[in-house]
Length: 130
Image 1 (tube, rainbow, N blue to C red):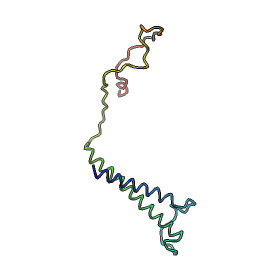
Image 2 (image 1 turned 180 degrees about the horizontal axis):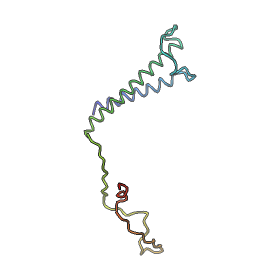
Image 3 (image 1 turned 180 degrees about the vertical axis):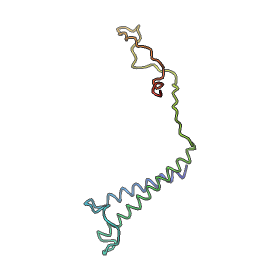
Image 4 (image 1 turned 45 degrees about the vertical axis):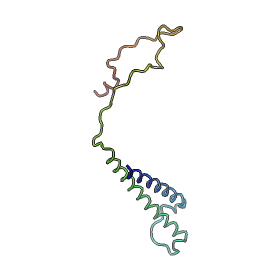
């Protein structure tokens, strides 16, 4: 469980860094579209900073995907279930009074609701499987 928590915190940090790096890039097509390679002006020029941000975005995105896969693998290992539950639990707790039901026949000024035909089954989903 502590590995899952650690990976979740690291992924949150990587996600925040990824958002920050993406927002720092130029929006006139110079952001993620810039190709790799060295620039003659070095790291401190505009081209060098754009290359650095592009490389940072690439590595942070790779780290984010790898962490997502690792978190999924850890979650599967810690859940302890190897099969998928394919049936629904249709049991209901003690019957609660329906607040939208028609009032009792003895109530003053109450209109009587028309009698409804009895349903074939108490379970409305029983016919859906056929």
